[in-house]
Image (cartoon, rainbow, N blue to C red):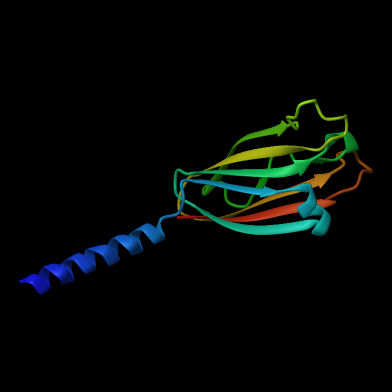
Length: 144
């Protein structure tokens, strides 16, 4: 009887451990700094997020140079992932930083259903003859 109880406890512990390990996080954040882009202009990453979870992507940005990230991310499968927000955040320092100091652009996404989708952004000068895709960021998102 005692060995049966111990075996049951072990099985429950293993099951809970496997279940906990298989859960994708509800909130995921991914970031790439200016230093990251200086060493590699084309960055690719992969993340896992749970269904109904949120994903935040934060990338270095300096609009004073004439460059900007795409307003809307290119999403390969809109049934899996949806962009819900995009904003520029200037650096917050005391005293205020000098003009030309880089800030960050932040995108927020919602995971809609299980599947895989790719999110792509380009850092370019938007005018017709401006530089295109100077920096790129590609994120493969696995929604579980």
